[in-house]
Amino acid sequence: MKKDNFDEAIDEMGDAFVSPNTDTPMRKDAFDISDQEKIESIQKDVKSILETLGLDLTDDSLKGTPKRVAKMFVNEIFGGLHPEGKPKASTFQNKYKYGEMLVEKNITLYSTCEHHLLPIVGKAHVGYISNGTVVGLSKMNRIVDYYAKRPQVQERLTMQIVKELQEVLGTEDVACVIDAKHLCVNSRGIRDIESSTVTSEYGGRFKDPEARRDFLDYINLETEF
Ligand SMILES: Nc1nc2c(ncn2[C@@H]2O[C@H](COP(=O)(O)OP(=O)(O)OP(=O)(O)O)[C@@H](O)[C@H]2O)c(=O)[nH]1
Ligand SMILES: [Zn+2]
Image (tube, rainbow, N blue to C red; front, side):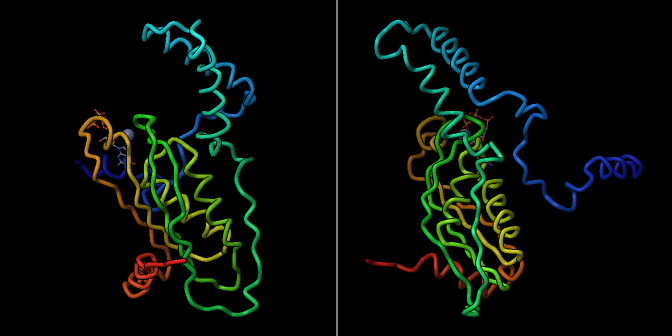
């Protein structure tokens, strides 16, 4: 590649080149219509898909499906596309001066693969080291759940969770590991039921190999209750 072209390419990449863009790609007019209008429009689209497949939508069992799917998309499995749904993460002062890492592990994760619209099911493990602020434990589960409720690739989901917690906590020292099964790999295509996908994102002090090891040791603790 000639130098001019390379420089032009870097210019076009802009900030994305130095700082990976973790935003879910959204249309600019994404929120110009209401959720109710989205449900009505998706309902028609799902009806059309099922009819194209040859199904008789006057059948008792099928007639409610288009509306059911539309409501599920907008209110449930893709509900995390709406900025207003972002959980309010209550933070507190770290008055007790707890200085070690805190790990919220085995957070159940249900998401949807954006390539096939099939489920992703797994566990997320999140850790942080406080620099003066602490966050309510359940808010970590809620942040995972919010970003999971989008069409996703696992890499982006992992990074979005870390970025959100870094903003909430005002520290770079946040880490996330996700281990999840993609039904598009397990149940169709290659149909490998055994494989799962592990992704990680380490910010700040978690880039240090010792902190990373501690974090992974915490995740691997066999906790019995
Ligand atoms: N990197 C990444 N890939 C994913 C994720 N979820 C699904 N995929 C992959 O996205 C790819 C899409 O590839 P395509 O070749 O366009 O789709 P396909 O023909 O259905 O591919 P097969 O699944 O191999 O049958 C597949 O390899 C999926 O396994 C994810 O979270 N991250
Ligand atoms: Zn997929």
